[in-house]
Length: 280
Image 1: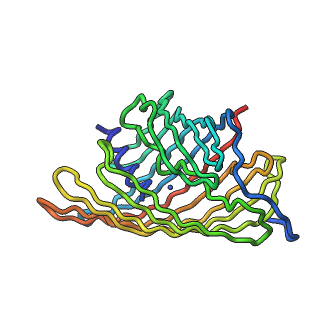
Image 2 (image 1 turned 180 degrees about the vertical axis):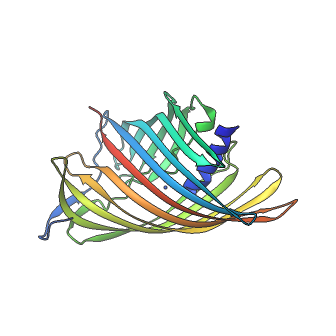
């Protein structure tokens, strides 16, 4: 029961996730290799404050995931078909007076995902379900590719992206959510990281969150706004984004209507670090 509660809180939390001074140019374009496997590590830290019944409840959550991505095919128009394997997840939470740590190995949730050549997700289908049902789809809201402009850019160049992410109601998720985001990117220039030359990109975005569903016989509605800032490193040799660090602030309201009506304001401060590399 505790695992299911943590999963529900995590889903709601997630949906609602030094350049040089001289001019440099680089091609910002994904160039995955068919048949190659990549590894992905995600670290999420989330601090949540809820107001309920005149009391302020604070929750803290840390989630770490490890997975692999096998490039199954690349179409003539550049679309990328990948087999994504979620292997390990660990969670630490402090909430409702309890300090809980859980670790799960060999979850082995496998999905076939199709991305456009600029990094947008086109489709997704589950091939093998997670070995622990409560963890199915845990990383859906945070395992995303960054949008790239697919052209050469120089210091100070900017580009934008508008996107809509939708999470459907399922047995483990009582609320359908739609997150509409507007992202602004700026190319900063070259940097040295761990002895490797990479391209730094800064990211700023604003989001609008809407959701509705039912739980325990009551209708549930969610709305809110968020803003994010962060940066990413693009490896020009591998043609992939190898590191990103995004900080997000969100203010939301969750309303329940039915046998009794209640409104729960919620604020979140979330940090997501993603590492993506070729498997050695």
